[in-house]
Amino acid sequence: MRKIGMAVLGFALGGVLAGGGVALASSAGPHITSAQTIHLLEHDTHQAFVDINHNHRPDPGDSFVFAGTLSNPSTHKVVGSVNGQCTVTAGSSSLCNATGTVNGKGQVEVGGTTGNERHFDIGVLGGTGLYQNARGIIHIDQINDTDSMDTLRLIP
Image 1 (cartoon, rainbow, N blue to C red):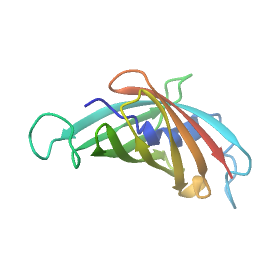
Image 2 (cartoon, helix red, strand yellow):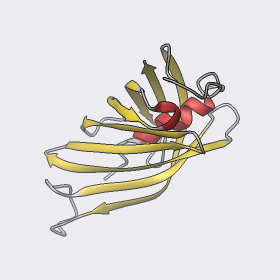
Image 3 (cartoon, helix red, strand yellow):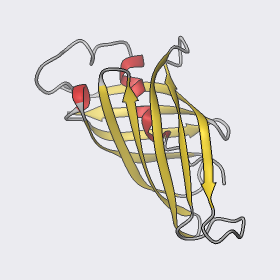
């Protein structure tokens, strides 16, 4: 089972830091005060397919877990990490949740249902720290089985 991207999340957080610091400059009150687009490169360093009935194919209840780094796509500097899980619900559909952490700045939680697409959108569910009022979408462009370009579109 290939990565379903929840870069899906992480993706989100690292991107804010990678995006240039505008969102990071403020330290009090709601930190997302206007619409922001953030780009982030996700690289999964750990992946596992949990095949609960051991038939070597995705069935409802099986899951894919992943963890990795989030980097600024321009400088390739690591700005955070991502951890996520997708659970097969039916056919090629999976329910995915992931958390992106920006080093010392907070977390962004993303989640939603996705299929086996290489390009998809899921929702930003919330955040902590500088991202406490985050909402919006994350668009995942899967490059290969371990890498994706994640575009986070945050609104206050």
